Length: 563
Image (cartoon, rainbow, N blue to C red; front, side):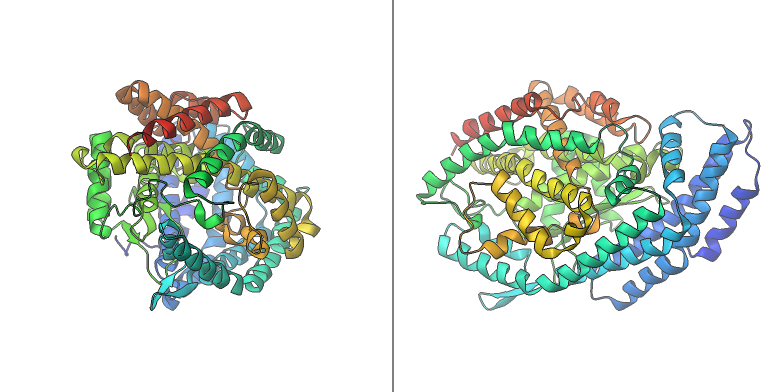
């Protein structure tokens, strides 16, 4: 990765100044947009690079200082200049081919922008970094070694229930140690966000965030309809799977640490020995889906744009960041040697390929991740998890025997089915918190609300004796803290992705072609059109959800017959 691809404000300012001073005409509009793309891509790549540096090592003081310096001394000026250019272009009344959606987005951004919010956004980023530090430092002693909380997820897949329980209890106790620190950070988040919304003239932060996320194609009420559809069409299917699991494990009730163990009774899947093997096999799988995808992933590997293994003082989770000037994506993960790591890399690979395909568009407003609806960005990633299923076996270049591949697919599909109710909890919690900001700022009230939602959407989990762990579940979902309201996208995208999977079962080549065509649209089409191009329907209803859940439950039953 080219660490020199970082620009400070002294280098960026002349680019923006020249654009602000230049008159926009029908004759020069394309060149002017190309100049804006150069300036914006350099600034955006700088932001992502300094952010990445704080994520790969949360204990790196220099990286933290570089990020703080950027946020304090470049970010406000950059955003102010971006605002000027948006207003200038909108005032000109001019456009370019494929620019209708970017213009729509700009109108929303221009309406939302307030200069007084820039320092608040800087503060919010600092709170995000503080949250990362809290979560990144969580370790436990396990079998004589210091292990990250993320690593302990491996233990949840142990066939020995006593080991699973012991590991989970250690992990839960360690997470509860940070309860008050996370509570305090949350109070600060909520206060800051209320101020941002008020500055922008919005009734609450949800209204502010809705416009910020450019949600033009659905409403908060649609989300609540989606929650109800999940309760009607998915929760019963998940309860059937849970009851089957309880019986197969010979238990009186299911604990959280019983949800991930393989029902075959065999040891947990061990798909790879190290990050090198994970990278090489994933590259081959991507190549089999489409040769271009394998080529893209190999390029990232060669350019040092893959940071896959878990380690101490590394931020939690996984993400893909676009380096817009270099026209290359960066993938971040926390692999510890379980099948979930394979799914993460396949998922983030989908995001990366979306970037590669969209980077072929001429202007940053068309290809930048901020201009692509997140609901469809997640179709790109989740669909890749399904499009790769035929290639998980070793004979197809993958990780497993046929039996183990079946186990892996069952694990994936069952996990996705269980995800919809969990997604509904996360999304419903956020709607409640920002509709009722006084209660939502109170961590005790948050605990009570989370417990209520757990009982509504995941009644099959026995939390008795561990109610404090259950009710603090909202503390352990990074999205709630760091990217508010960015979670329903996963639920909507999963529905789109299962439809892509359905298509691929019927005709893999056609489904991949439709998928790739949709990725290439970048941010030039509205959300329903992106889904349609990929061969899916953008929907919130119980009927579509029910059809998807039936396909998934049926595949689980079919594949279980292979082991």
